[in-house]
Length: 334
Image (cartoon, rainbow, N blue to C red; front, top):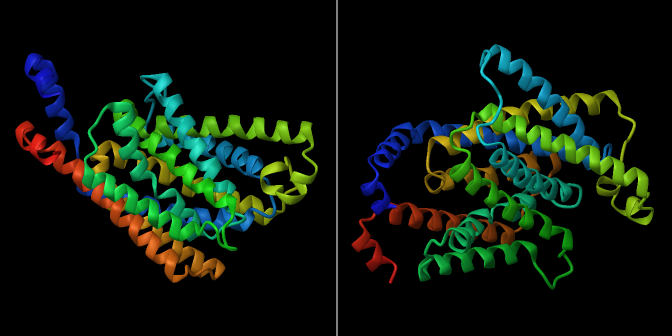
């Protein structure tokens, strides 16, 4: 990276402009505020999980999101075009994020919000692994140790081999993998896109997945699976007025949160934002306790602490190494 910048003055200007555009305090406030709203939204999603299917919920919420985005585009962004600069990059990011949310929400009827949040928040560890595998970044022994510590924390929460273990608990962990891919895509490929464009791309992808999910569950009639897992394997349900009101509220919360998170990741390095990202664990536990009376046990709290600590350490190492001169970096990686 350094040699390429020295060879190309334009690259130097581009890097300098990128640094000037970073606004870490704003990014941190956007991150924490957005995650507080997402914690509230997720508790409301759990409230409706016995009344609608996952596919119906996503279709209705994304339809509301698109309507709100069109209104916001007129009021807040004027006539700015929502057309993405790189359609394939926005589509790829949307696919990863929708995959993460489908896996995340799929476990909501069966798990507490704290358990789901803890599974999702292994994503910084996945970011480190994907950065090494896909981007060729070096992962030293200390970061490997942190990744292993985070994995142990996940095991403390999932409790494999005990009566409390559920295979569905692996769904939020898989969601963490998809979310890690979303973060890398946002930072590497979508930094110049408008937050409204990114939110619109996600809404369109959610709507498409919702329509496909409803069509498949309606045409195939899963039978026993539908009876055992109605949230995942049924299609359209009749809606009561209060359910419609909750979906509308979730749409507003989701839209504001997605725009805030996209702007946060565009405004600061993901490694710098990582400690603030873990505030969702606190918010999910809070809303789970307030609305559902779910309190994590001691092992789960210990596991969450280990995941948060390991993720923050990985992020700190990445940020420290990115600022080191090349000679110092080589010594630190040995």
